[in-house]
Length: 114
Image 1 (cartoon, helix red, strand yellow):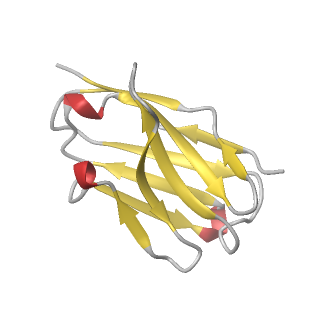
Image 2: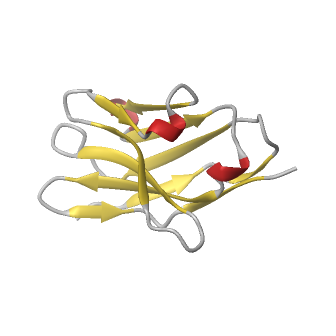
């Protein structure tokens, strides 16, 4: 079993930045692909960014050049640095750990509005 706890969401103006954190309850980065997903009201959950066990990174086209995923193995924590935020980035953001099973965090709200 893996517990994931997200933090760092909030309200930010367009063009601003936020950094999300996802702390895992144990060391899993050598076995689990870590990802950030988001779900806006009335929309399906979508992949934002993910990092493989070997460090390969993928981004959704909509966030390329603005968001950066990274991880700190010593802290069992994955980050999502979000810059140049837009109103369409407003959503609940979820951390995901995937191997044999899928684990999800509780989600953190990000609202981009003036």
